[in-house]
Length: 198
Length: 66
Picture 1: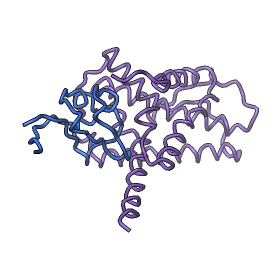
Picture 2: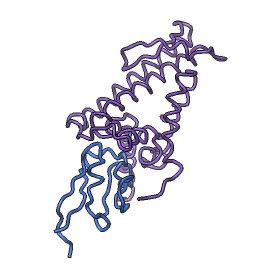
Picture 3: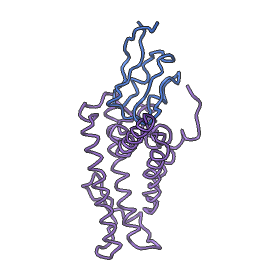
Picture 4: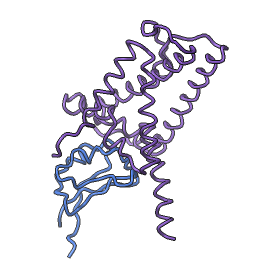
C-alpha cells in the first residue's frame, strides 16, 4: 500500500467547509474551488487528477463508508450507473445551477429581496438566518452564498445516502463534476489521437 | 490460464477509487477516461473490483501470452 500524501487529508477541508456554512454563509464561496479546480486540471492537463487524488468529498465518503463501516457496500442499481442517468443528472444539476445564478442576479439588480434560506434537494426551504451576519458588499454576494451552499449541502446529502445504501464512493458515479471532467478528457484525447494520426 | 482484473471501459467513470486500493500499483487512469490495468503487475486480489462504485471491474481468466 502506498504511503499517505498531503492530499490524502483533503477530506478535512470538505468537512470544515460544511461546518463553516453553519457559522457564516459567506464561507460558501470557498466551494468555488471544488468547481474550478477540476475544470482547470481536466482542461489544462487532460486528466482526472482532481477525482483521483484531490477530491475531499470522495475521501470523506470512503472514510465514512469504508473505515467507519457505514456503507452496505452493495452494487448500485444498473440504471444509476447508466450513461443516460449520469448525463441526465449533469444536465439537471447545471440547469438548477443556472436558475440559482439567475436568482442571484435578481438580488444584485434589486428586483428581489435577499432570502436567508438554504434550499435542500431543490425543494425544501430551511431558514438559515443564524449564519448571516451581513455583508460588506451587495446582498447579491450573500444570495449567491446561500444558493451555492444549498447546492453543496444537497449534493452531500445525496452522496451520503448513496454511500449508506451502496458503495462508499457511489456519489462519484453520478457526480456532475466528475461526469463533466470525464467528457472534457474524452474530447481532449480524441483530438490528441487525431493529431498523432496526422 | 491466469486471472486478472478487467475494466469495462465503456461504463468506467474514471474516479480512481481502484487506483487507491491497488496494493501493486497495477491500475491507473492515464487520460481521465477509464482505468487501465497493467496485467503484468495484477495479482487478481479483487480489491479494485470490490471498491469500484460503478461495479465495472471483474476478475476474469486470461490466456497466458507466449
